Length: 172
Length: 169
Image (cartoon, rainbow over all chains, first blue to last red; front, side, top):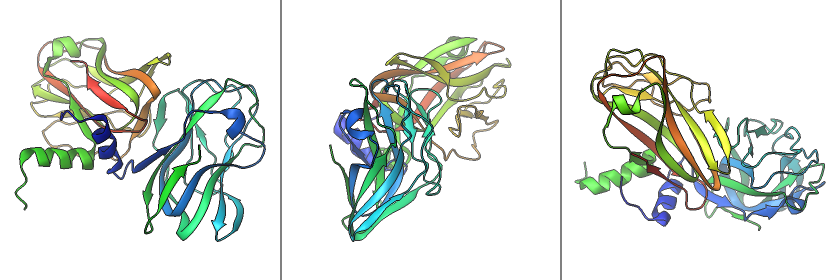
């Protein structure tokens, strides 16, 4: 194996289409992200292909029956919120290290919760979101808020740009 | 064909099929006994896009079955299968491979009887945690190998910040 530096390892991964560019949030309190209405998580410029999109429990979730689904909110042009997945099963008490994965199969396909913390199989499909020259947000609507003051998570989006200048950025 | 030097070819390989980490050559009597053998440490969260055991010398005529498992030490999570057990690896010849498939945690690895691998792996699986540490293990059962040598390979992509893999042997 080559003795790559950490930054070279990261860039090598990002050049592979099974990963793509990795965009992740900071570790964030669930009270800020798992809310009763849509919370913007990533900003998308142009059109991107989602290779994987998930949230990982950094600390255990609180005992609230949050059932998040991913949505898109168009800014340019203006498009009202619409679902790009169905809700997951309840995330009440989700264990440390478990991930909830966007499936990408259809706009009505439910998110998948890891059976075992730290082991996540490949997302079923890829999905393109956004539009050439446009701006939109990937938002999470959980219906039931997480209220625990210690529950935290990280969101990770792996994507491939599909239009000129397309990119994604985490909003926190 | 462009006249690439070997290090450039290596780097193109790492970009297109994942970063390659391999163990040294290990006696089967050490690595493929009945029980668990730790092969790789995983720092952070990685995406495994290939993993195999390659026969460096022919395996003994013992009906060993093998599977891969993952255990997280940080955070602490019990060991879990990331494959089902293979068919017997008795007498696989030099250069043949046992290939993890990654489709599901209950998918059996392929065992090739020759140096040609069919049905190349196309699925992948993420293991590990953001800022965590874990170990990938090969666990053998039914019969211990009594001769032969092998090498373990992994091909991966980093997903969490600073993620990487180290061979333990």
